[in-house]
Length: 355
Image 1: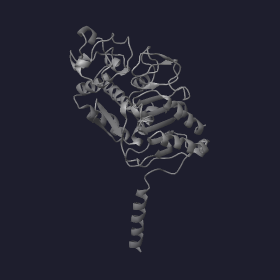
Image 2 (image 1 turned 135 degrees about the vertical axis):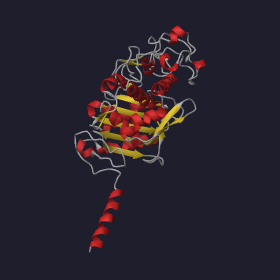
Image 3 (image 1 turned 90 degrees about the vertical axis):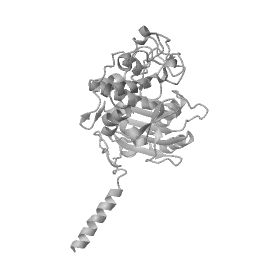
Image 4 (image 1 turned 60 degrees about the horizontal axis):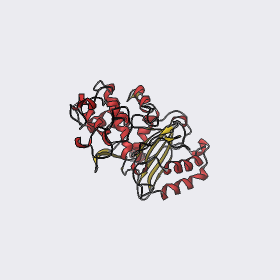
């Protein structure tokens, strides 16, 4: 009898371990943080939220037609919708492209709260004089904050971040231009922490919230690759103002500043985060100022990590909602980053579901 009982217990444990994808749906309104290890993750049903389930098929068809690999919606940290396309799975990784800038921003903030750097300090204090090809007096105007806000005043026309390309265009803080010079923040963090950037990032951010993923050298600079759920984890951290469970990973003041207007030239940009709901915006590769909101049919309080080929992490505080989209470019002939018609079209489909 003891042998039978023991066998039953062992089988029950083994079978139970296989059920680690999601928990049964819940309608809990409290914030949920998935465990840092394993695949267990609670769900919330659309029915409990009063959403329009009849519109889901149209959303999924749109995502598939637009070359998506994965898509998630979370409310209060719980999964409401999780879909994979074209053979992509929950364990496959994908590049964040420029959406990964927000990881660099957050890691920089962590280094500041640890007293390793000050974002008001000039970059040359960390990288040494001559890190650009700008005149010394102009180079010394560039602070860490200017790198965080795309306001360095350096030429943005060449994607490769090498000294010869970092030439003076305008005084720091007087011109907004989307540029790859932001990646010098990785060097600032590495120099100030005396650690490789990725090692610091893993210890202080990635591992603390249970993310997977690595930085890999791309054609121009290092890009982060992870599973879709790891991007969702970072979204939960962002939704909670830098807090994960009982630990404030990044201080709330820095994160509030990061997700609000950082300069008065492009009010729709924070510390490498894109901001909705502002009166005007600028886009990469242009000095044109456009009137209106970044994504006019998305919630006004939304802030977002956005990358080339339509990598998207939308965070909507008013709805306690996170939306993740990863995949190939929605328009293959226009793969570069843009606040594009894709965002508006996607939010049209989301709005039909979310009530």
